[in-house]
Amino acid sequence: MAEEIELKLTASPTALAAVPAHPAIAAAAGGRARTTHMLSTYYDTPGRELAAAGVTLRLRRAGRQWLQTVKGDGAAAAGLHRRTEFEWRLAQPRVDAAKLARTPWRKLFAQHAPHCRPVFATAVRRRAQLLAFPDGTQATLCIDVGEIRAGHRRAPLTEIELELGRGDPARLYDVATALVADLPARVTVASKAQRGYALAGGTAPEPRRAKTVSLDPQATPTQALAAIGGDCIAQLEVNAEAMLASNDPEFLHQLRVGWRRLRSLLKLAALVAPTELLAPLEAELDWLGTALGPARDCDVFAGETLRRIGTQFRGEPELDRLRARVGRRRRQLRSGARDALAAPRFQQLLLALGAFFVELVKVAPAADEAKLARTWVRPLLQERHRKLRKRTRHVHRLEAAERHRARVAAKKLRYAAEFFSPLFSGKRAEEYITALSKLQGALGRLNDLAVATRLLDELAPAGAADLPHARGIVRGWLAASLAPELDKLRQARRRFAECDPFWD
Image 1: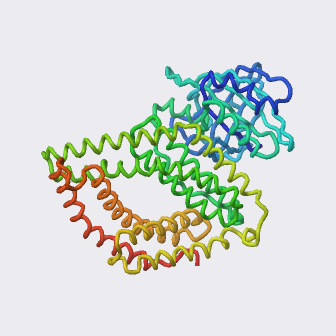
Image 2: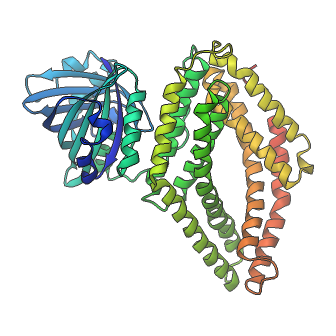
């Protein structure tokens, strides 16, 4: 058994051809590169039970050698993949069930291995080059060019893999950052297996939502922060890649949620990490936010607010013209957001975030860091809980600016609570986070009304000769929506006040 740690990039064949001569590769290259033709076949049951369990079974022919490989469902973020791997040489190209019985998934294989059949295959020409770094770290650079095959379906496969042999994974980020700075390459969290299953099933990408990260009860603060950081980066990364190819607004929504989670997590990391590591990341996240925020606000205004108004006021020509104007602005902002995601600057940000969390676990422990994460986070959660209670004490009398500050406080508390809830009682945490989410949601809907008012003033200004009737309709609808939403906010605040903190 071994832990496979590799960083993956995807690039065009032209870009891949330039990789071997790149200074970052040439400086670390040791020995001659080897080229191998590999055919890998992936197996699963008709019901895809292995995939559901997060397990991959593969037979690979590399030159004249046959290998059987089993991989577990690991973590992937900022291009870095960590998985448990078992691999054996075979005398013949047939799945060896006896070897599967030596893995942690022996029961799964005992039940399903007899029913496994080929699902898809990859055929690649791999150029492998050993890399050695001054600190003793060793890695292998693999350049794969080929395709994924699933029945009659085909998809190109052009990847750079930097697989860690021993040493510090930070060196992988150093090399990847240098490559991305000079070549049109992108980090990717999708493994060959994931792409193969998608091709075989003909499935489209789905929005990547936040996941609850399992935390070791003995984890230190930096270890817990790094584990959570991986999920936040993955949420950013997967939705960004999908948004470049899709108009589904949910990708932008989840992308912005990932951005917010990362910002909130870095505020917590600032308590244990050196300022010089954090400042550049915060500046780059601010840059990304200026592209994502306006685009998401316009999505909500066009896709939710105006859509709901339109169902009540059908056949209003001015309202149709306002929707068309907002639609043009929406497309413009979405195009700007896509430009930011397609830029090398975004790829460099993803790699910088991944490198930061790798470095974070190596930070020398301060007095607070010597505590367990569970102990360390309690006073932080308590302070955020206290601030939110204070900001929402007289919620029915809050002005828009005060409600905005309360919403920010609710988001900070919710993200921190969700991040660290696995370290505490599941039921109490679930009840608390549910009530907190409803409070945040009520504050968010009121904020949407305020944002809609601002966007209306920008796109159909008061006193302008065009669209006065449409402006009046929208203004009236927004005003009429305020009282019911305030009532929902009061109810949500009352339910939240009844919940005891789960970290006590």
